[in-house]
Image (cartoon, rainbow, N blue to C red; front, side):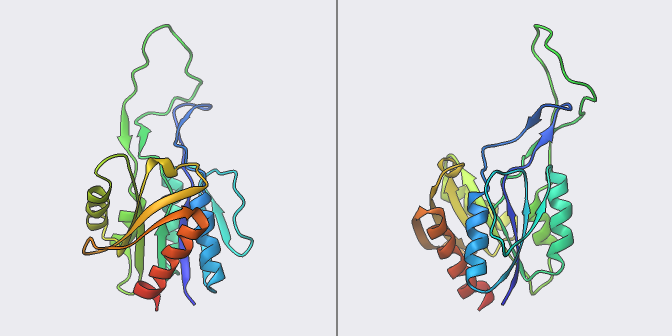
Length: 209
């Protein structure tokens, strides 16, 4: 039995007290991964951004909002885990300055400077113990496999799950599961629960078993 950290859902980066940057991640993939891991007898800790989906009752859910909060919670819990699956879609950018009051319309374009948020998967992969493993997700709109392999190498992942933007907030998914050499271990298309089961099967074979 392994203790697995799963990040799930979107994060939010506030511009002012009422507006934020985010994306369309629903958390469904994270929920399905958690269920697949629990079905195999593993312990699951889910660090999740704001979602409407129900997570499996057997998972410990740690709610967060921002990318920084997701990183901090993941670092805390990853220390006691055997591995992690980075299925979340953290917001990649945040405003350099968050306004303390609501931004009002002026009739003029609004110019705002954005800076990158921390990379959660890369940070945890660089800090991990030799015995820990990391699986990443790469959601791309072009050069999907090439960019997934590049991300896997840059973020020091042991496996990478490649999918396209159509996966966001969808019931189904189509993915390629890639190993560190860039080899396609399996192409899977179907319900997100079916995809999650295939991903956990490879994690068990390559990283746990």
